[in-house]
Image 1 (tube, rainbow, N blue to C red):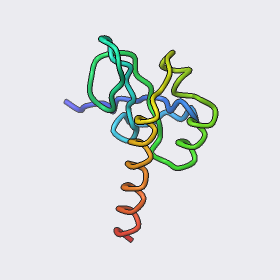
Image 2 (cartoon, one colour; image 1 turned 90 degrees about the vertical axis):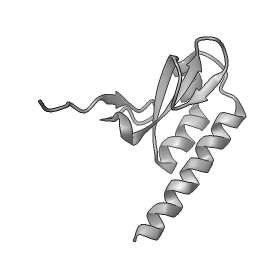
Image 3 (cartoon, one colour; image 1 turned 180 degrees about the horizontal axis):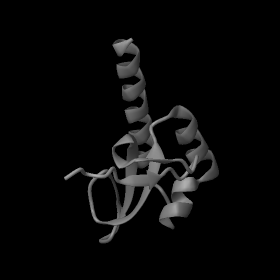
Image 4 (spheres, one colour; image 1 turned 90 degrees about the horizontal axis):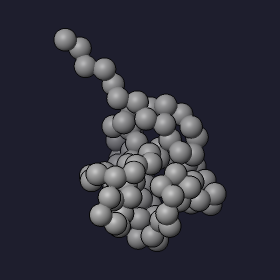
Length: 92
């Protein structure tokens, strides 16, 4: 039996990608926000600089989650972005 890839859409570029290639931002059911794990309303974001900047500038995560996104969430995503970029540069 083959397992199908679970596809999700980036809130910025609207591209359908495998869920493993995207960051998940969650508005938790009990209140608050989280990254990657939890139950609640989710929004997915590509792991690229351009999608991150566009999402922040145009408030795409806030619109998708229907709440204010804390600066700590944006800071954590930016940290991941720099970690991903530096890991990609080392692989070359």
